[in-house]
Image (tube, rainbow, N blue to C red; front, side, top):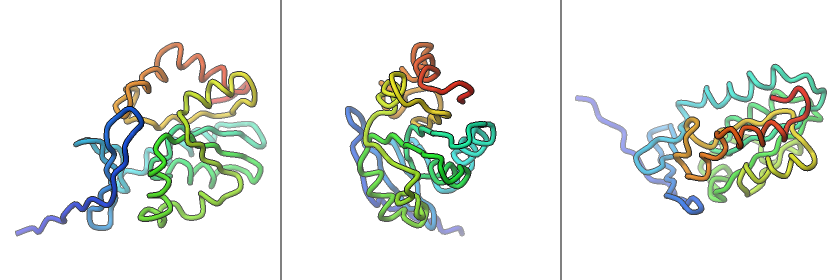
Amino acid sequence: RIDLLPRETIATAQIPDGDTLTLISHGRDFIIMLGRDELMGTRMQFSEEQLAELTLAQLKAPAPRVLIGGYGMGFTFRKALGKLPAAGPVVVAEIVPEILEWAKGPLAHLTGATLSDARGSVELRDVAQLIEKAEKGSKFDAILLDVDNGPDGIVRGPNDLLYTPTGLAKAREALNPGGI
């Protein structure tokens, strides 16, 4: 007989104009759920880390400026900070304030010192707003989108716009020459 580990709800958070996120512990692992869908979990961090690692390995800028759409469990942010030179800033756009509370609380062991790293900052706003702002001013060398589990706005309907030809053109315009 196999005893199954129980799933325990740690916290919930409301997505602006959307559904509820649930932080769940499952033994040593943590999972962020959207309804019945698993958005991210500690057992599946590899793809989030690779998003940062593979992108940053291709950048030529000496102090690349990076935008990450979505904090999640902080895996992409942590990897980006670990791969960037001392002068490279990373900006994360996150729309759910509770995600940062979770990062400082039950998920602090995953976050490490990333939230206090002077090269990083988290802005509580939609990544599309930061992309639009960058089109007109300080551009990025890389934009890493990790706001959904693929190019569908499963977390929020407005995220669909990020993956349209117009949304992708806006992201391209928010990049410095040679940006990714």
